[in-house]
Length: 311
Image 1 (cartoon, rainbow, N blue to C red):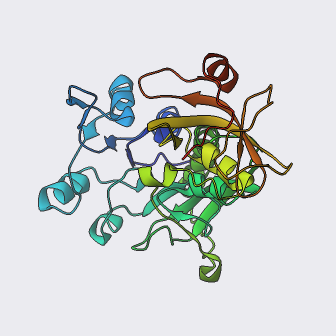
Image 2 (cartoon, rainbow, N blue to C red):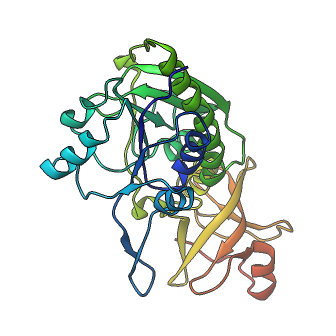
Image 3 (cartoon, rainbow, N blue to C red):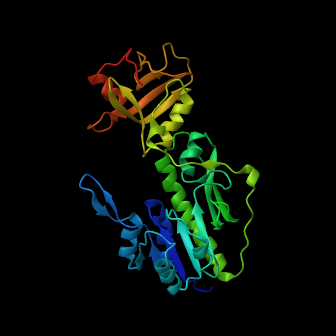
């Protein structure tokens, strides 16, 4: 098997298993591209991306251009003479001039079973939609948004109570294995993918903080999906007596609710039950501003809530 000259491009923690897998293989990256350091925290000090930190620990050279469209960025990339560029949640657009540089092209790890959930937030949208399964796709990159031929897909079921954070970790590890398999196959010889079915494509738009605000008129099942989809970010929230109440964990209850949507119901010994547009939602772990997250039962012991209105 030929050792490939690989450039790896990634930024968040989701990309770490893939970087680690390649670094431990015969195809150790010759360079890692990641986004520039960004201000973070209350002090707004510059913070390196998780991928940069890992690449430094691995002793791999790092490039952090703000764009890949400049002549300097293109020249630096060409000087590496990559056989293949591997992209995992990089966060910068690769123009056609970059896609044309490596002799084997560019491949991308995407956290869905393409063409379902193309776009920025496939994990969250799979949970919001109540999908029974999801997975990872390794695709050849082209000028479109997640539209390239699929080289390999790996499928997993979605657990009834799994959060976006838990599913992301699972898919990151699964994707690393799939990615290494594809790279090994490309090193052996030609490897052709399968075109995507455009008629089956769906789009996973970027999640905004405003999406996390709960509408209690929705069914309990749908609200519970939001709670899971928005954990660990941006965290589902509602209003309680003028304060923001963040909901980290909840479960739907099928029995009908007596009360207007958003009403806290009496008599629950397992959590805080809230009336919704259809059914009841049991809040299990919640958080007020400036406080740590606590169980809803502990919250109720300190602050009885029956009859209170959320939202």
